[in-house]
Image 1 (cartoon, rainbow, N blue to C red):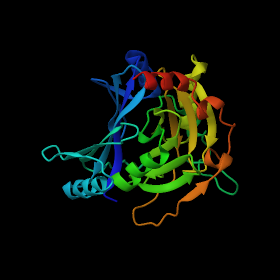
Image 2 (image 1 turned 90 degrees about the horizontal axis):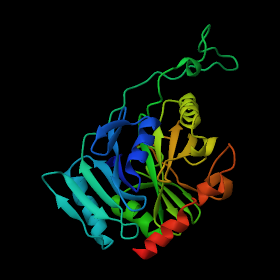
Image 3 (image 1 turned 180 degrees about the vertical axis):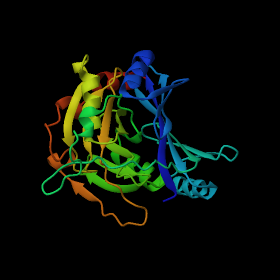
Length: 308
């Protein structure tokens, strides 16, 4: 695959300092100028002021200039304009529906350090004899390893899906019938989820942590003094297979800790499935609250969109 990583995204928010403080508590490192960083991926979130919350930009890593040329050709076939900067090694295009700016940039592939698997005892096997589980003796803060994916609500599901899949070159991993498209630009199951919605808005971002214990420890810390941040979890998705826990940041955008995501190597054939009903949302866990499917501020976002 010419595309190899969702490198970063820019989120516009009306309450910049409050939202930045939340993501620092979430485990991201403050790099200045609105940038926040993960342990392995570096600067992956930039917060900027905006009248209402909105997804402003996605940056996507590619291998070389030929990848940019091929992408430009595909986008032009969809009648989508592009802008190239040869010196910077970038190609920029906007999704005509959501207005999200996408910047493809020639950049080295991220190489995550290999970490030892968490030892678990089970029937007929003892992986950690004579010791307590690592998850209960960890004391440091939970620090996300990398940005996994972002989810964008769109008023034209087919057009936005075509922009990412047919234009930019994302590959389809799975679909939720008439509602969602799980699309990947790396070996992760998905890096962008396109979601049918009554208004354009950022639904959530998702961040990789080591294992299910890190999800639990992170949730415990985030909710200890702010139970209102809870949205949905703990559970395991069907599409992507990952464990999840969702929280709400001060702008109203959800953020997710995840672990154990499906991986699709570049030389492996993956057959997308189309899910319906609960399987499109989760395999096990509590049912999603109505606010996960229809965030509480959608009416305000729609009013703001009409006024603009």
